Length: 197
Ligand code: FES
Image (tube, rainbow, N blue to C red; front, side, top):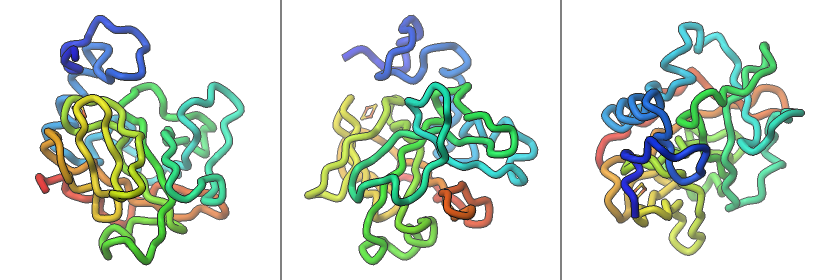
């Protein structure tokens, strides 16, 4: 398979995240730090802590509907973008802002993972820490999210630690909270460190 990081020529594909020089630079930064705070929607926004970020389906092109926990079936991941509720715009200017959310049983989560959940919903960067492919395949028997590019698997009930495959770090975790009936990104709970597992 073509190296995802070298795929600067592809246009609009779903497999490769580094489709422009800017995306490529940002991807390298995210991969180097492994921190959720290096994701463009947080890193490029000085007032990110005051912004209420809800979540909207990444495939939506208009009529953005903020996500409620009940919109997610248990064990069915969804790719989303943060959504600036005040401005009414999704933060989809960079594909690196794409997150994967999933609703899982809270009593099966590790304590620090449970602390980042909102009504059983967890969020992580949807971008693989190996070479930037999207991660969106749920393996129920293993309680793992898989990246189909080179088969890395991440344990979502336990901080998205790497179970197998070439990914060097856990997926950056995005702490969630509730904003009324909607799932929102929390700024009060620290994300995971994204250190090698
Ligand atoms: S990009 Fe290689 S395992 Fe995900």
